[in-house]
Length: 80
Image (cartoon, rainbow, N blue to C red; front, top):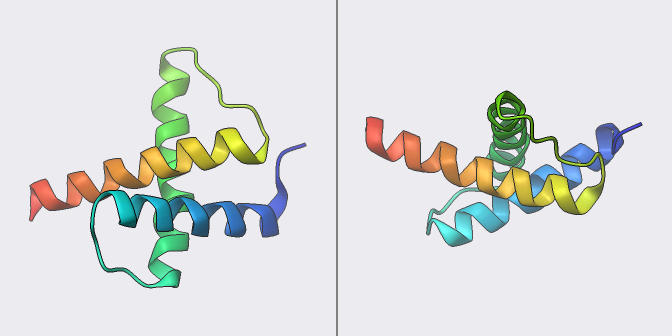
């Protein structure tokens, strides 16, 4: 079933906000939502190659989204 569209936006925003706090970036709410959602998708894809699947619930997706957003921020900083 999953968390749904509205749930993905809420979890993505929270995950992006957590990642921006951890990585000490100054991003707005829109960028936080985008970072959290894309971060969750990217890290879920990477984890699936190793046979690891996050549950389709709020808390696991929040953790994966925050970690994925941190990974995206780190990657952006390395490329820049």
